[in-house]
Length: 102
Image (cartoon, rainbow, N blue to C red; front, side):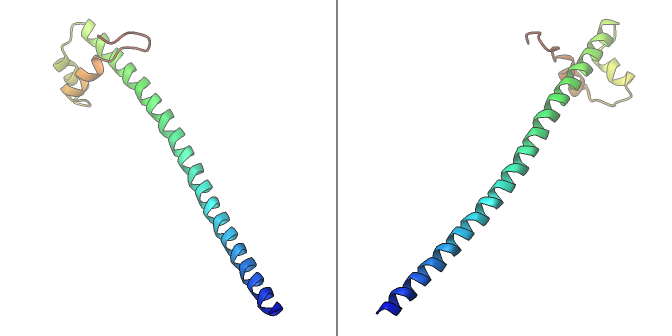
């Protein structure tokens, strides 16, 4: 009977060790994934902020061209179609940082 108890304890110990090892592997994979997601999220946030700043600059350039008497169609022609009329209209409507949107 003592041998059975010792054998059962050995089996339990081995099973516990295997379970702990499996949990550790899962936690490590989760930590690696979280680290990758954190880095990607940071890149995304920075890139979006940069894009927004560039779009505001483009809008300011379009508004400057409009102030010089061009129409939005003229602006699109002037930039040789690098932006569509729809995009130029959207960009022209962007307010610089700190200005309220109408």
